[in-house]
Length: 223
View 1: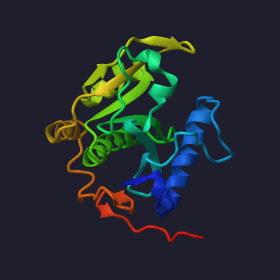
View 2 (view 1 turned 180 degrees about the vertical axis):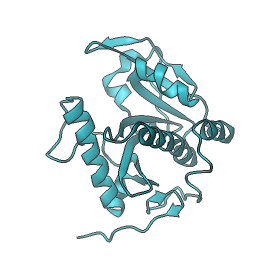
View 3 (view 1 turned 45 degrees about the vertical axis):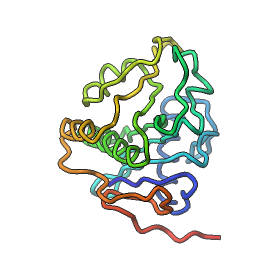
View 4 (view 1 turned 120 degrees about the horizontal axis):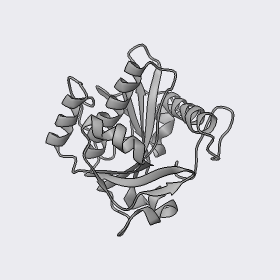
């Protein structure tokens, strides 16, 4: 199951928001040693702000599978602020391009489970972003992940600039092709997913988080 929500209304998906923050801490701080703001069971930074969206994936038995963060570049982006040298021309700054960051999958899952999580976050993210007006996703990532991962899932990527090294690894900024309904359907089939992950229309001003079958029941806000 996917839970999709905006930072502004994160209190309506409090459990999912806490889960994704905890997983980010486990993956990026404990596992990769990133020096980002964190506590004993959370990680967040200055890009966790209004205008940002989150997608959290759960397995059928309720275990947390993974998460990601989406930033409409019309609100600014990490690439624009931190890595503009990776883009040869102008860094995209439009709500038709969303930046993917903090993509995390629980490393304790089996390979098969991790593959399912990746597929659902990938395809579900496209569905959600497209319905929110996005046409492309921009990603700052390791070159090795592009070569071994994303391309293997049928995602066609365009490099926006050179491959440059940082901390001994090669990184690149890439942009997905136009996320047309046909493109998303092709990726869904390549991922082995049987049906659309987010089935209900979403109002642009919807306050409630959305799950795989439409609006989800949410927790009552505590004053």
